[in-house]
Image (cartoon, rainbow, N blue to C red; front, side, top):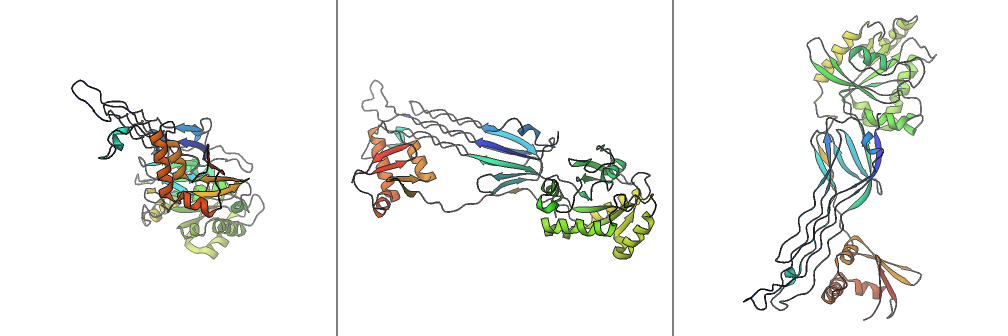
Length: 419
């Protein structure tokens, strides 16, 4: 089954906890701190695999979590890093953050990979906190939680040529004539419900990939029918063939059909109209088709080719012309080079909201600080207080009007405020 979109949850592995330990050996008095660091959590990595052609694998499995790092132990032995989880997706997959719509990666080249959810850092062992003043710290950090998010996967087929046309225009018959693809063909609208790819061979044994895009209808750019699902796949094509029903079997004007198709592409993405294209008047074996072919040629000249996908008339000439046009288009002009999209922005350490008299403090940095602090250790608690003070939390709470005894909530921890 062809699936071209999916929504899944990804989570990087949590970091391992640091260890509190001291060196205790004969003839080594006052050995000092000896606790190792926790290992880093594994990343969730997406990789483009040319052997895949659908997102079917994500229809039933929705959660992907990488391995966590192991905890540090005594003798300064650090925990092992968690193993990365590699998730394979088809070439042409777009990865989008579901919360904000930000594009995280665009995997357009086989073998290209992107880290989508990073593993958490390992917590530091107590030997990391030793100083000339404080030589025997008895605190260690918990591991940092891994990144987690819901993401959307969208597959946009990579093909040299895209077939664009109304239902029943003959696109599927054409691709079955020029390639080994065998889409379902029948005489009713929307026979083709999924895109089909075929490899076309020229007389000189050169080849190119052609995509049969399911039929568009007026209003497709607004999502009418399955418009957005179909139009998505046209964006990757280097060249377009507008397949028109010259026999006017459904009673529509062939000239109006072409104008409507152009308008739908323009409304969806104006850049599509900049692609090289040819106009294909199909079904010229039917009555009145020759007259409609002449009308198109009078209007658009050498861009128009008359064919019959059923009988094969004119098909070979169209294939050769299509390959000639493709030779004039740079290979990376529309398929795009491999792209990894990363955006970095200044992040506030926290924000404060007063809800029902409770001062709610939130933010990724301060949430991580709470998670990585072991509050059962007195020294860790003192370090937490010093760190929040350096962040400016005390001053910000005072600006909000906090009083002694008021409740401060950070993540799932609550504190009574005191000077």
